[in-house]
Length: 475
Image 1 (cartoon, rainbow, N blue to C red):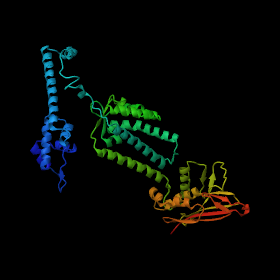
Image 2: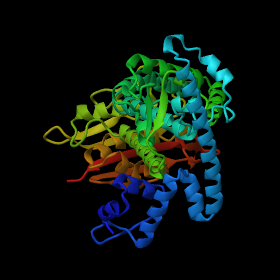
Image 3: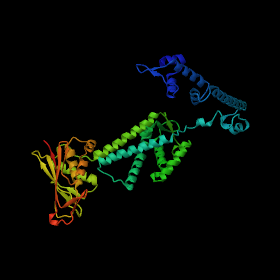
Image 4: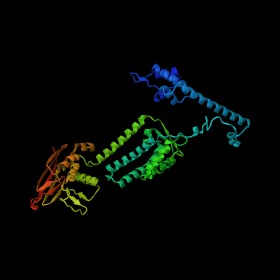
């Protein structure tokens, strides 16, 4: 049967049938046109569900019966006892109604305690007419709620990091103080953005992925004031003001309260609702986290690329060098002038070598840079340090600029790694249309991996080192 034929045959709605499919009671096959085809076994399953549901059996009990975990006779016996208790409760409610009517009570003068105290109820506690039905349902799922908030904070952090790296050119060091500042930056963003989203859209990105809704007692979206109050309480009571270690304690307390279906401090005037708990929402979270992580890595890689691309003028090349030097070192202790010469802005003492070598630029008739040369020549010095950073900075400013590279393809090219591995040796590297060569002449030195040390008993006048690093754009 098709689903339309099934609706007519069983007297069920399409929504009923789809719901029982989602609950796993039946799995119809798919036809050539991808429409569902229901077998006779599926039809019988739906008939049984219809009967048992109309008898009042819960879905979980029907699942146990269907799987063989529970006998049908046992399930029916339980339901009979439940129905008997409900009949007694209904009879009690009927007697109370009759007594109140015979007393001709009015709402304004109703002595409710009199009827609660004097009439015996057949069930302990609240019974069939439980007041729990009048409360906002508590949505537990503490891990879904935790990861929804984690995803929101990760989103804010990723966007801020991308802005700082690409626009502000701030490359933060990895230390505790900077990490704390970044964390509170994300919290401040949460305190501003989340109330706006909850009061307008009704979700945050993390809550939307997990199907979590925050609503007021009337099922409507929160007002901005209520949303702001809620977010501040989350920050204070849920996140522990972001204070290290104390926030872990607050996470644990919130988890226990949520798992026990207690009302959390920020839910006194509102509550969660959840659309569904399908596994695809968890996969959606994994996918979203992966996308954000990839965006963060892409931002880091792209931030290391030169600002000016294509054929460069001398001014653009120098601008690339200064921008990348400042970005990588987060220092302005030296700056390159328009002629490729380094100008020291601080009184730095060079212990080994002559500092960063100048960049000699070769220009074509149009004023575009076609070659860059770094030369270092030292005589009589006992120790010489490698200038790998200067070479890599030049390669980033020129080879990465004129080539058809992005942040990822440049990293995959391995040019910077090859320059680092080259050390004090001669080598040639091809970076797209740019040929990078290094020639080294040294006398009286021993290579100690990143350093050259004068050999034992070598006279100072015999110590000589010359390095020429050239990048040439091929026609």
